Image (cartoon, rainbow, N blue to C red; front, side):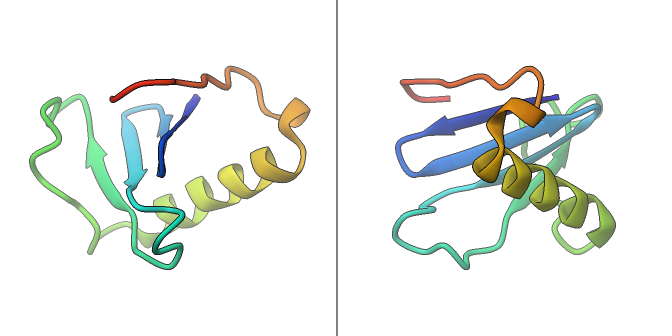
Amino acid sequence: MAIYECTGAKAIRNGKWKAVKNDVRKNPEKPRKRYILDTDPGEETNLVSGKPEIIFEMNAILKTAATNPSSIINIASVSGNF
C-alpha cells in the first residue's frame, strides 16, 4: 500500500486498486476516481460507480493515516506531479 499527497491531490494504491482525489483543498467533498491498475495502467477508466466498499476501505485508510501516520506502513510523500 502507498499513499501519495501532492499539491491539492491525494492518491492511495492498495493492491491492484488506486483511488485519486484532486482539488482536496478547494473541494474536499469531490468524489474520488478509482482505477484497477493491472488492467488500466493509464488510468483511463474511472470505476467510481462500482465496488463502493473499495472506496470506503481506502477512505478509512486515509483517515487513519491523517490522524495516526505511524499506524500506516509505506507512506510516500511526493513533492511534484504524479
